[in-house]
Length: 226
Image (cartoon, rainbow, N blue to C red; front, side):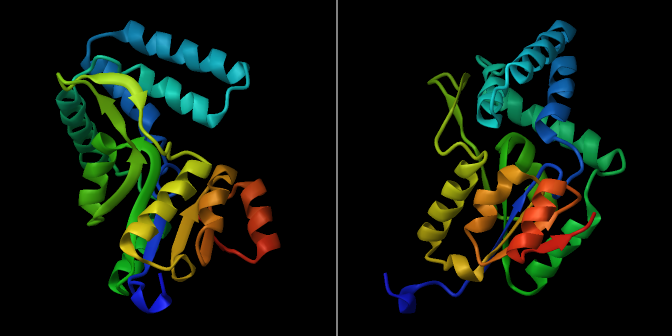
């Protein structure tokens, strides 16, 4: 496709957990979910499983798969309702856990006509209320697989929006929208976000991760303190 046919729209891709918000949405939500289900033993099993998986050196991708396996047989509709209730409690009835410097950057992009996109290994039932509150139209996130009865299978779709998968999702999005990667921005807080940061023209490292901050300095990327 020639550059003349490319869209002039610019996009800014934002990691979510510990970039836009100070919490890990998936884990924060799971405590809420287990209480809502009236199953404290579910949270105990969850914590034990993750402790073992981390001790065994499982990758972020493997841990992501493990997380969603805990929702097997849950109704998607129930998960969506729980996500809304969790967001209402966590963001609207308490001090919202936004990282204000990054949210301000997102709003500055919006004011300048740059379209923000959320990119996360989290799921839409948790991200959609956040996106709605921030007036963000696009979310690239984990695709939950459901059966014919609307129950989660415990498996997830492709690409897995963790690590390199974030870059894969970003590139597919840009291809679909005919946008030039070199005109776009990406924001991430962890070394696992490097593939996504490398995929655009302007990369911004968030927060105090020594490994990512050092890499950003070596590559001439921007750094935004939080």
